[in-house]
Structure formats: structure tokens, C-alpha cells
Image 1 (cartoon, rainbow, N blue to C red):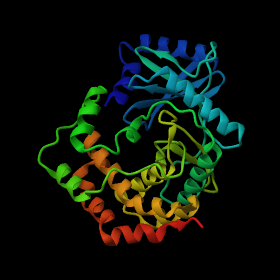
Image 2: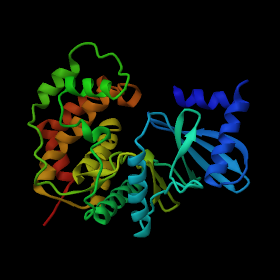
Image 3: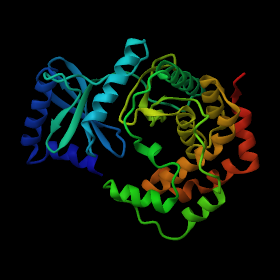
Image 4: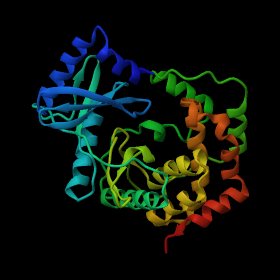
Length: 325
């Protein structure tokens, strides 16, 4: 994967050039002189994270593997800043000498943050509860913010049929896995749910990628910070809830963690509760089209995706939810 190739290039015969580029990044962000590249941290499909040590401490250099709109990065910084001002622990990117939350490393756009000594998600119910509670705090804090760039990430595609999703992803420069057979189309027909009318669903600024790997936890299993703000945008709040439940309920089949997450999040409207299983299924369909690898593999998750939209699955999800009064 490209993340690993970047890390290897630093230690290769061409590593001197790569290290000089990293040193320039350090100077741009005023984080001291580079002393060591310690590790390649877990990253997503669109970024790589290098843990570095400088004369001023430890930092993470986040390398965006896909070109990001600068306006969107500025917007994300402004929203994350608002969260921090309100006491919500967003891991705010550092600013360059020119006051920007990004610069360039080789052909990539990069950001930096302080390195946080904390624990990753361990699939503990207490952590899931805290994750849901933190997501609700984010949603409530940002509910009145109306300004938003155009939809991005999975939120931009979840209403579309599989063929249109594939075409749009290809137009956006994504290289898709080969999709042989009809499993995706068959599941979409089984899903057979009309386009979701969002006009009456509660809206806020959503995170857009509220998965357990974007949060860090303290010794009390509470979220101490969260990160990755590329997909901040105004949208229906239940999307973030469904997105998290895809990881808990579909990938891990963990009903207790799902229950605790929803307890932490709190009340949902009747319409949100009704649509939640279908949104989870649509998110699974999207990941199957876009990634279809490892824990995101469509065939691996198909039985659980069918279950979540079955009568039994819908009733299970409904039973986990707290109804808004």
C-alpha cells in the first residue's frame, strides 16, 4: 500500500531527499528540528501518518494521499477550532508560519498534530458509550452552523445506486476493485428502499467518518480526542450514528458495543430510528464498492448486512435506540 511505500522510501537510498522534505515540513510548522521518524501509524485509505520526534517533542505528520481542496481543509480547521473553543477535544491541526493548516511534502498535502499518548479503541462497552456521548456533544455544539462545502466522502454517495456510485468514484479519480458477479446489485435490489427523504431529519455539522479508529481514549475509557476532519459537512446527524454502527454491528457483530454506543448518543427521532438499519446497509454497500478488502469486503459482511435490514435485525436496532420524547 502507498502508506508503507512512503515509510520505506525514507529509509531507502533516496531517503535523504525524503528526510530533507520532512525537515522542511517541521520548519514550516515550527515544531523544531527533526530528530527521528519513529513509526508509520495506522492510517486510512486516503492518508498515511508518520510519528516523528523533533527537538520540541513528538508529532504526527499526516500525509493526504488524495488531493484535497484547500478550501475544505480551511473549513475543517475552522469547525475543529470552534469545537476546541467550546471545550470539545478535537485534535486540531497545527498552523504553518503562513497561518495555514497544511503545507506540501513531496507531491502530497500534509498536516501535523501533536502526538497524543493515549489508547486506541479496544472494543470495550465503556469506550463505545463514551464514543456515542462525544458524537452527541459534537452534533449539539455544531447544530447552529449552517455554512458547509459541498457533500464529500461517503455522504456524497449514499443515496445513489451501485452503478452510479462506481461511475462517480471513477470520475473522482478512485481506482476501484474489480466487482465480478451480481452480489452487490442483488443486495441493492433486496435493500429496495426508496431514496431517503432528509428534509425532516435533524441536521447538524457531521463528522462524516466517525469510526472507532479516529478516536483516542484515556485510562478511564473516555474519548480524550478525535481526529480526521476531511469530511466535516452539514448533513443528517443519523448518518454519523449509522456510520459508527457499521463498524460495531456489521464488521464486528458486537451487539453490546452497539447498544452502549446508542445509549451514549441518546435520543433519536422516530424517523431516524426507522431509517437507521437502511443507512447502515447503504454504508456497507458503499464500502463494498469502494474498498472491498479485508474487514470491508462485501462478501464477508453480506450475511450481516442482510440481517440488519431483516425484520429481526430492524427490531434489534430499534430495541437499542432511545426515542426522543
